[in-house]
Image (cartoon, rainbow, N blue to C red; front, side):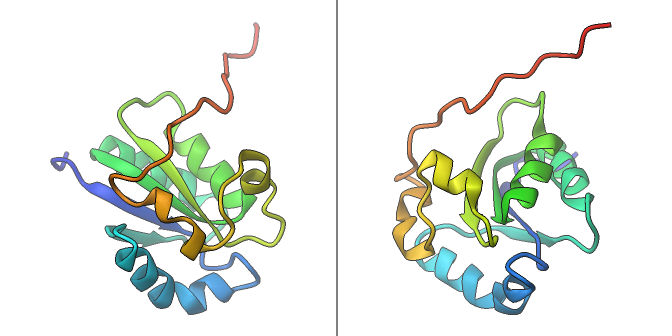
Length: 134
């Protein structure tokens, strides 16, 4: 296992009809300019972000940044379910953006400077899960 990885971007290049993949270098540069940089893992197939999130958390990542839409957030959350010591941020790049709208997360990176280190919004519990009975 690696020592602390710091920040890991979990990117769905297919989100926003493929625009995220095409624009990822620009998005990464803008995030770095806002004080948020780290390693990037781009998914190659549906469901892979769950595996990548789990592996990054197990390898000591402190912050996972889901870059994509609602499906991306869903996969990343499933990957870190039950793990402690890892935070989640979202850079919205989907078409529906239900998650970010519901939780008041800025839709534009320029408006999301509060996700930069030292400016993070207070974490809040969005849900609690428990095993299915039986």
